[in-house]
Image 1 (cartoon, rainbow, N blue to C red):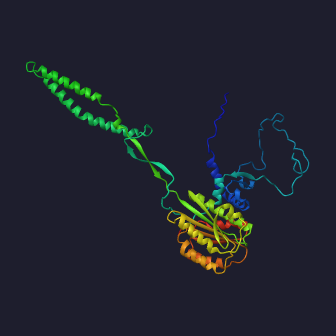
Image 2 (image 1 turned 180 degrees about the horizontal axis):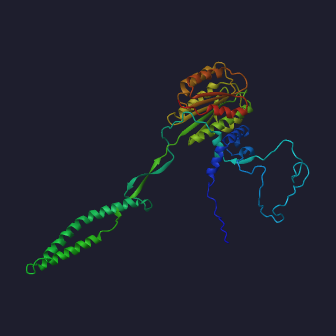
Image 3 (image 1 turned 45 degrees about the horizontal axis):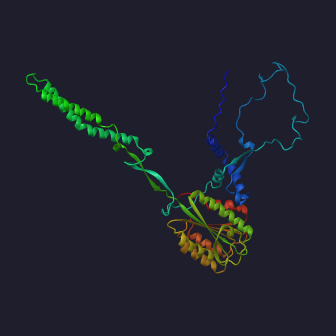
Length: 427
C-alpha cells in the first residue's frame, strides 16, 4: 500500500471566501462587538484589528442523531475486551456528573466556551463604517497631478522588443509581401506564357534567341520572388504606451476646537476621538487627505496636532475668530474648485454674547457655499446656549450639508458619528 502526502503550501487567501461567508452570517454579533470596542478603545488603538467572541450556542450547526429507544448494534474501533451481547458497566465517579475534572459542579446550568477570532484592520474598519456614506463627495479639477499610469494608445512603428505586437507585425509583413510580389508574379506569368507559346511553334519558325531570352527572364523573376523577405524591420509594430494622469480626489479636514477655560482635558479627549473617526472615514473615501488644526479662545491660531490637543493655553471664547481663520486658509491654500472641504467643530457651547450672530453670518455667507459638509458636536451635559440656537438656523438653511449633535460622554461618540454620516435614502 502506498501513501501520498500533500505537502504543498496553501495558496495565499485560500479561505478568503469562507471567511467572508462567516462574517456575513454573524454580522449582527460582530457589529455589536465592534461598537463596544470603539467605545472602550484608546485613541491610538483605533486602527488596529479586534478580537471578537461569539457565544457557542449561536454557532451550533444542525446534526442528525439516533433517537432514544430501540435496538442498535454498533462497532467501537479499538475494542479488544467486549463481544456482542456483553453488558457495559456505567463509568464510576462521585457526585452527579461522574467527570474526571477537578473542582465542584456548578448550579447554573450548562455552559460552553465562546468562539473567539480576530478581525483584521480592514475588516474592523469595514464594520465601523458599515452603512455610512460621505456626503457630497465630488471629483474636483485635476491639478498638481502627481501620479500617472501607462495606458495603451494605439500602435507605433518604434518601440522596444518587449512591447512588440506580433499580430500586427505579421499582418503588416503579409500585406507587404502581397504588394511586392503582385507585379513580379504578373510579369513572371506573362514571361512563362510567352515562353510556352514560343516553344509550341514549328521548329522551322521557332526563334532560339527569343527562347533563351524568355528563359533568362523567367529565372530572374523567380529569384526576385525568392529574395523578398518573410518579415522586415519595416513591418514591425509596437504597442504604444502613454502616461495618463490619474484623477485623485483630494480633501482637507479642518479640525476646529474651543480651548477656553471651560474645555477640560476630558472634553478634548472626546473631541479627539471624534476627529479621529472622521479622519479615518475621509481617508477611506479620498486618496489624499490633509488635516488643518485650528484652536481658539478669544483668538484663533493654526497649530500642529500636539499643540491642538495638549496645549495649556486657555482664555475666553470667541468662535467667530476660528471661522474667520478657516475662511482665510481656504482662500489662500485650498480653493474650493480643487479641494473637497470638510469642517468638524467641537465645543462646549460657550461663546461671547454677541459673537454667535457673527458666526451664523460667516457660515451662511462665506463658508457653507464652498464646503461639502460641516459637523458641529457640542460636548456638554447642560442645556444649549446661543451658539446652538444660531447653528440651528444654519442647519435649517443647509439641511443636507450641516449637521449638529450633542455628546455627553465618550460612549456617545460612535452613535453620534453614525448619525451624522448615516446613508441617506435617495429620493
